[in-house]
Every structure is written in structure tokens, then in C-alpha cells.
Image (cartoon, rainbow, N blue to C red):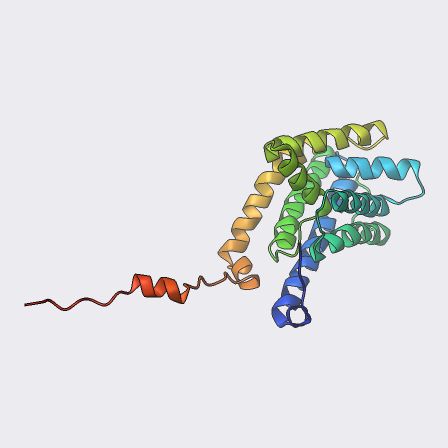
Length: 238
């Protein structure tokens, strides 16, 4: 459960963490646009979002929002309270994606060479990895999809890798049946997102960003414990 106080929300540290969170979500959306425009294959969740957009009035980005909102409701039934980061993850990534598609800063690459599409797709995976590290670093709440994965891991006692693979394979199958784009880029994402996130966290750690955003809590020793640790040395008796 997440607790809030006005003093913490209005602090400069909280504002900095919030800005890094938003920056991470923006980066994440840029990576998704790269995957989307490369037309080389989407990640499993975006295969589902694209499939939903083909059969509903929702855009690709709004389908992302709708799925995220549904997962938050499911997590509430599973007794998982969303954090600030969870809510903004659900809202902003899809809205950022739609805004960028409308701006058309990256045109559709369907007719570009396969090498260009491959490079843009790989770039998208790397940017998604960096965005993931940036929005996790402020520790303001997991995304809706990660929250569901962690809760199911707790309930089923299965390994996280098995839970995640089961969820993403199911999502991928439904998205594919709805017409979502599954190709080489889908495999590239599956194999590359883990290393991309790991490298990104390594970069952030070298820059000491996580510890600056959320300083480690000093360990305090109770007075009773100090008394037991520091005992007077008895004088020698003659």
C-alpha cells in the first residue's frame, strides 16, 4: 500500500523523481513508435494493442491506455494498490504514442529497405529499455503489466520468468489473432529487452542517478542495542 503526505509530494526530491518518471515514459513511447513505424514486428503487448485498434474505434495509443486501465482494475481485485507511477504509466505512454504518430516525426517505413527497418526496430528496443530503467528508478510504482506479473508470481509461487512468459505468450496469441503485427522484430524484442534494460540500469548506476533520486535510508541502531554493544570495561580487582 502506498502512503502519501503533502510534505513529501511538495518536496524538490519528489518533483525531481516525478520529472524523471515522465521522461522515462516519454522515452518508452518513443521506443514504441520506432517499433511501430519499422513495421518489422511489435512486442507482445503492442501486438495486442494494435489488434484491438483494428477492431474498435480506439487508436493504437488509446488501446494501450484501455488495456492498462483494465489491468489496474484487475490488480485492484487482486489487492494490489497502484502507485503514482502506475497511473501515469497507464495514461501517458499511449497518449504520447498517439501524439507522435500524429506528428509523424518518424514516417511509416513499410517501403524502406529491410536494413533500415531492422536498425530502427533495434533502436526502438534500446530506447524502450532506457525508458523502462528511467521510469523504474524513481520508485513511484510499477507499470500495470508488471504489477499483474508480480502479483500472479506471489499468488502462484511460480518463477517470475515463467509467469511473464505465460502472460506475454497469451497476449501475443490474442493480438496475433486480432491481426497485430508479428514478425522478426517481435523475436528481437523478446531477446533484446532484458539486456537493454540491464545496460540502461548499469548506465544510470554509473551516473549515480537512482541513489540521488531515492537516497538510501540510514540504518539506525536502537538505544537499547547500543547499550548492549557498548559495555563498560570492569576494573581489575587486586
